Image 1: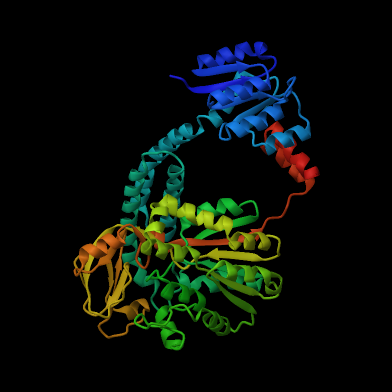
Image 2: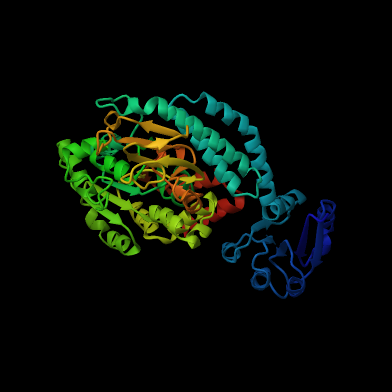
Length: 545
């Protein structure tokens, strides 16, 4: 079986016979030519897995040959092999998107390494990743069983997200096993919430995990007390796995302090985000600021009073912080915010709400086309990443990276892909959310729910004396017996929120600080210690230029 189909172009090809025999013994089929013209002709006739190309040849140079090969086979990796270490040659080779750069004399192990990196990387990564998850599977299972605290569950969720991202980047067939383990973890997490949640939200309780109403008091105000300019960016419906993907895009701009906090129930904007901005539980908002609270059955938008809620919290703590509030629903609003950035830096606090991911989640439910585009968790993350790369959000963070300020990046709740329908019966005034219900005479036979019969104990509004709340757990969602099949087919495998799961409740709380650039001597030390000789020279040359 052929390991790979190679083209090696070198004007001294006969001197490389030992290397070619070595590769042939490893299972590679090697076509050899001695000049650029023949190499181009071979590329017209055959598709190669990789091309090894000498830079200094009579006639067409390696760089000239490279350009024409890329026109014929743009996806084929080309490795430049040369005696030259001149900066301009490196520039041109890297600019032409070479796969690797080898300095003569090369040894067989160097060549074999570059072949593995460029031809077999995906296969090797898949095998190593699968082995890694298999080895960790039992440890994670034991950790799920032993988790007794919020920190324990955070760690479980981090590990599961890590392996989810690792496996999704490969052709692994173990994603189903991971999904089963995530389901097991969410079942355990739901039991943990049932045991502890009501104790956390009792009036006057201070010893509890960081919850939605605590964000300003414990995260925002301390930074303001240190005379820091703070940007609080709340991305609606933003999950931890989505953050892990986005973090790779901004890691070179910021020092990142990564944490999670616990969203209150229901994990929905009306409750969780208003709790963040007010510093109060929903029932407290309703009693203290009835004009700022909107009931479930009201047609008015549920998140229209966020700016005055922020003001009430600042005033309640007798602070004098200047602040601004901005809600970004489209690119026009984002552009306006970016244009005003210098002006906003005069404020102590700037609050920015970004709605794209929540809009995507709801659009996926309503639109067949969007559902196809985001047909699984990996695709959902991919769309999130694509949005970030091409949105003003990326421009905003780049601009803030140049400012002397702190950025708190967070969300109000996450979402989960709901796949298991649960029948529930309620009156006509029962709310429409698929992951939680409140109303009179709610009847659900499933054990996969969390019931709060007395909303006042959970500091939740109760429109009627007999109102109760029922929360879906794991990947379940509520459907009415009437038109049951229609609701199930319509909402199955859609992203929903409002209930109890790690994805909805354990959500990112990230503090970003502008990264200080290394001075030249520090950069030299780092490059020498961390990079290959070629890359070290490259880094230092670019720094000097």
